Length: 334
Ligand SMILES: O=C(NCCCc1ccccc1)N[C@H]1CC[C@H](OCc2c(F)cccc2F)CC1
Image (cartoon, rainbow, N blue to C red; front, side, top):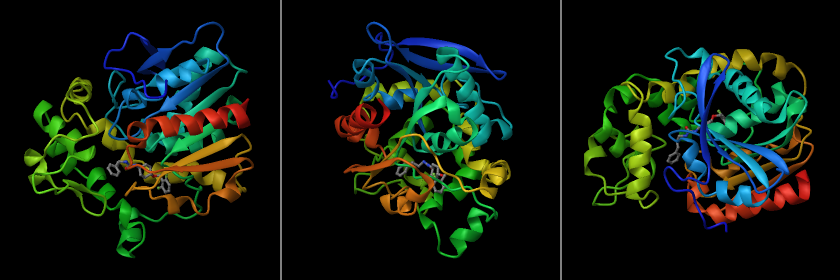
């Protein structure tokens, strides 16, 4: 049932690794009874791991899908190169295309889903590998149209635009990975990012400020993570050498690279032909639903839904998210 979710180390999925374009990727593999109807690849965001899709995996297997859920570059059991280039949206798309083809072959297709930064990846991958994608969906993240001019985020925010992205100026800088090292700080970091508050109800993360590091050691547990789930996240991140967040935060250092790689895409009108689904989260402070208001012109077949949840909609509104994905697969993809 949709309310069913994977537990840490759950034996309903296999834990595999693959060599992908010179990097070791670790992924969960869920196989349905009998011949899979399709293969679906799920792409997590920041700060997450494949386990972030725990509420969706059992449900998608029950639809007869083979489910492939990688720890993305920099995360969990996957390599975390120190340089920035491997984290560009095009490089990540090429990694995922190679991983997908291990299951569906050179001429096969996958259904592709992403959340958060994974949503930014899934909106670019079909532009680089259109034949591979049978259907694509994103939870929270709208389609970022390729731009023909580069504007640094700092300048955009100084104009009072995209102030909901201001935390990214902190994340792309040195202080976050410098301040969050070791298991105890990682524990406080996840509690903070997953909505934990101090005893007087104050959050320690605000999209228009960033992480308030001095509040981290006075947070109460986040209602969104059980103790076991929190410890699983901590152990997965602690497996990387300090600074454990360097790889994950490199995703925030790729804006110029992504702009350069997007250039050829910006020269021609971009239209995604395959069935597409966007599920927005009404209380997502980083990615509010209105960011998707101009999206339709880039799609031939776009379905838009919304859930009453925070950024962590995959777990907070698991059954509703699953219903929208299932409905969309049955009506638009199949
Ligand atoms: O930073 C992210 N997640 C961490 C914060 C999670 C959180 C939010 C709220 C409360 C607690 C925790 N996500 C990124 C994902 C990629 C996005 O950039 C690409 C992009 C554009 F630049 C413009 C338009 C759409 C578009 F997708 C920028 C946000």
